[in-house]
Picture (tube, rainbow, N blue to C red):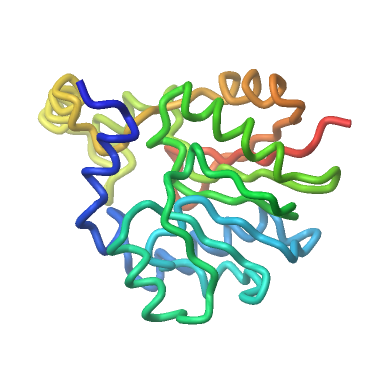
Length: 221
């Protein structure tokens, strides 16, 4: 059986865009929400894990000169590089990525759902080595397992109408291992892993995507 890393490497290898609502209105709404997670202290040195094709980069306000984006989708990075040729972009698998730099902000959005628990543990361990005492680790857009039944019913889709057919379809896809949402987490699971690596976690619900939550972690001094 393929490992989680191999599974997602194969899946994203030929994708040039993320599987997301890509309208300008949806991007702007999401970016406004995400900026609230770090804009109170204006980070300079930023590492983005799972930067994709950079669809939100301009709206997130990261300083281009001190930004590094990491993704293991080659076509995603090609697209990002084409629109932002001067950025520092690295092709690598996100959960195992680590370098010698120190970052004010290590950021991801809608990424850790692609990580198994072991991969998430590794990501937190690696991130901690790249953080200083005032750094933050932000994992945004985490699917909230307590809300998965409502999601399966379609209550978070446009119109919000429950559908037993949709619920069955989602359940079948999950059983077949083809659920594109990946791993659904509970906040307490994230908090336990954060404490293991000396990080304190705060949680925020998402307005743009109500079946997700955001995690902001800081060094637990």
